Structures are given as C-alpha cells and as structure tokens.
Length: 373
Image (spheres, one colour):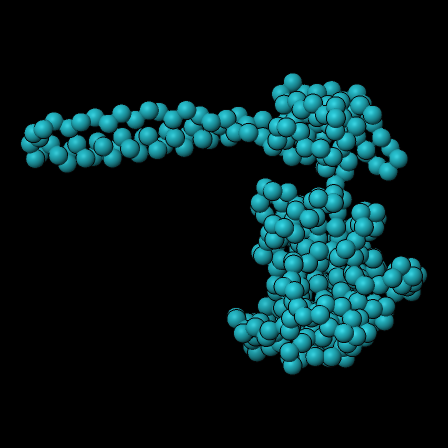
C-alpha cells in the first residue's frame, strides 16, 4: 500500500529491547594455588556462555512480542479508481491486508495508527523493470533509426560450468539471485507509487528468468513474490563483434534454442529408459528452458519496434510456447495494433509495458500478460 504522507512514527514495527543482565567483574584473589586455576577458567567460560545465551533469548522474546497486527483508522482510502472511503480503517496482519472499509472492527491485539490526515491507495505494479545500466555514449540514428543512448558493448563472458556455447544464451541466469535493485532505482519507483515490480535480466538474447518482487525495505528474502516469473528473451543484437551481431542472427538463435531444448528433453528421456543409450551431456541453458517448452513458464519477449513484436509472435507460435511482449519505445498506435494481433497469434499474448511507464498504464498492464500469471 502507499501512504500520501508518512506519519511521524514509522509504520514498521519496533522491536522491544529486552534488558540484558548486568555483568559485574569479580576480582580474583591475589594468590591462587595452581590446581584451582583450570577450574576457575572453566567456570568463567560457562558463565560467559550463559550470559550470551541469555542475551540471545532476550532478543528472541523481544521479536516474539513485536506487534504483528496493525490498524490504520480514520484515513481516506482509495480502494479502486472512483471508489473512495472518506473515513475508513485498514487492518494489516503479518504484512497482509485482512480488512479495509468504513466499519471495520479493530482487533484487540492491533497497534493503532491514526490516519486522519492520510490518503491510502493500492500500490502500483511495474510489469517490466531492468536493473540500471551504466550510461553509454549517445549515438545518432543508428540501425533502425532509434537514435537513443545505447548501453556499452556487451562483453562476452567466460563460460563457467556446463553452459551454452554462446555467451548470449544464458537461460539458466536467475534474477532472484541477483537482487536487490540499486537503492536509488528502488527509491525512484516507490516515489511514484510502485509497490512491486517484475525485474528482468538485462544482458544477452536468452537472458534468464525474471522475478516478481516487492519494493519494500525489508530485504530480498521478504520481498520475493515469485522467484521465476518468465524466461526473458530480447530481439537485440549483441554488440562488440560477438555473435549474434544482427537481428537475423538473433532470430536464428531464438529458434535454435527452442529446438535444442526439445531435443534435450527427448534425448534425456530416451537415455533414462535405455541404459545402453549414449549419455546426454549436461547443458544448464537447455535444462532451464524445460518449463518453457512444457508450458509451465511463459516467455517475455523484449522488442523495440513493431516489426520485432510481430517477429517475436511468429517465433513463439512456431515454438508452441506462451509469450508476452514488453517494449519501451513503441507509440500508442503500435500498442493498439499489437492488441489486434492477439486474435491472430493465439499463443502470443502481448501486453504493452514501458520502462518509463505512467502509473495508469502500469496499473492496466501489470500481470495481464502470461509473463506474470
């Protein structure tokens, strides 16, 4: 949820600090016989261990008594566009909203926050966010006439493990293992009302899986909503003289990885049935694409031009996979045309998303496509 004005006291729970036992240093006698020295050291170690255990136990008790139920009352609540509760109450239990309305009963164990000067509305969801990239030199009207600031050339990574022979094919990459986003990027998203986002990898043609995360300050562990939302692919040639360096090469790579993933599935199934069959070499990229070709995970196609969107739909239809499209530079007219194409390419369900998307568009598009279902 988003609050128009932050109250003087943070809505986050404050843990109660349990008092630690006071430790008093006991002076040793001036003269001790040597046989008693080891026993004294053992008792000192036991005493220190008991004090540490008591401190940890106190911290656990403090965490246990931290308020887990909160109620914001007398606030102006916008439940949906055009639906406003002038004076309402929201009850939050264990981080989830359990009730919201004008006549909501406040639980007896709730910590109450006065919201008479606040406006509360649902947090927006950004359906496509990539980690911030280092600024590259501005370029003129290059191929395709885009004339935008382009990222620096992609560097070919040294393959590690049983990966694909092309550095641009990294289907095994998991965005969830590379969170969180940069602090300034998180703050900019929260400042305009976004509470969650689908974060997608930036590098390569077959880029790996995206993750749906909350944009709070509780850390990556608490913020992950879905760890593998979609397999991300981009119709973007690799720069720096590395294959595929053209759009034709990118299309060829995309088609080939789908065929290779299906061969990998069938070959391993055959090898499992017959022990005399030649062992199938391990390939992390092809293994990561198995949920895609089985229909359990969608593909999110990144495109910058309308023709690329149409080409992506053709690739997805040919491979028999469920896909959606995300772009950042298409005009509204192209977006409307892509909606018409939904009736033509039944296995390709595009939704319009922009990196600099307006809240209204994000609210309408977020999680509509297969990438977030």
